[in-house]
Length: 239
Image (cartoon, rainbow, N blue to C red; front, side):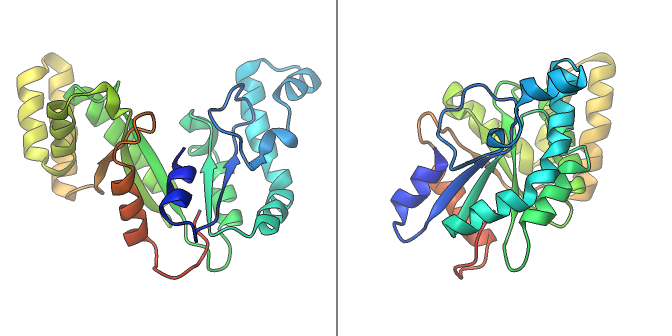
């Protein structure tokens, strides 16, 4: 995990992980702080007579009741960095009031924060998939407008170098994105994609898209360097 990469890279940095997904069954790491110690999805579903989707929505909202407990646990660790893992469904965190509230509550005082948005390599190989993801990234950035956003091209171990270069180029050169859209899409999808890419072109470049793979530990040095440049160089805590 990225936490291990950071602490191995600089042993003077202390870091912990915080899991905020109340419904996850299996994690590829052992979180230092886990919302599942406070909220059990199955118990929420049983108590309120909800299915999995409704249970996840309510469980995500109920997290705000335990923010003081989570802050106390973080204070006990007294880390330099806190890596927060949220539910993969954007509507559960980014698009409800819960997400910004948690981010603002945990990010108190001098703590510096950033949101990492993942461009899944499986969905951005075609211009329309990339543009759809770009819209989602922009909407998340709008929701967390007072927090810096890091855009990460994830799972690049599934792509070849030419594909990675093409996607990263789309993120910085919207004329190239328009050209690819014109060549590879058709009909209404082409027209909509062209219009949207033109809007982004007028707005200017988005934040740098950093290609990474946790599985292959690829690009983690770029991500770590970007985060160091983004945050101040002092020893404030980073979320």
